[in-house]
Length: 118
Image 1 (spheres, rainbow, N blue to C red):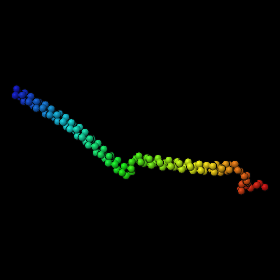
Image 2 (cartoon, one colour; image 1 turned 30 degrees about the vertical axis):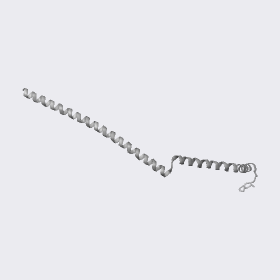
Image 3 (cartoon, rainbow, N blue to C red; image 1 turned 45 degrees about the horizontal axis):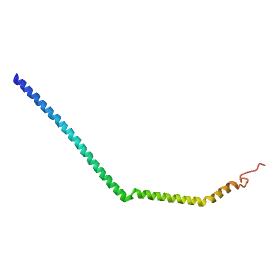
Image 4 (cartoon, helix red, strand yellow; image 1 turned 135 degrees about the horizontal axis):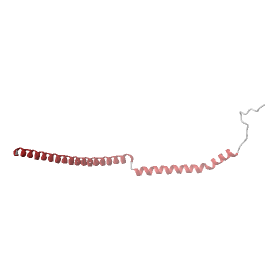
């Protein structure tokens, strides 16, 4: 009976050691997965930064810098405003005369389609 109980004790201890080894292996696996995920994230971030830098360089080469574009657009807008303002000042008086003459100089006439009632 003692040999049987010793055998059972040995089996229980072996089972416990196997269970502990499995838990330890699961922990190592989880740790390695987290580590691999962190490494992959770092690699992705590095690659993304590298590609964004290359894109900005190509964009600058093709389109010029944003400062130049902004300055060019601002200059064109200012020139257009200047042209419109000078055109307004040149034509204001003649337009006012035309408008006033159209409004004030009324010549009453009978409409051509009017038929007097006989």
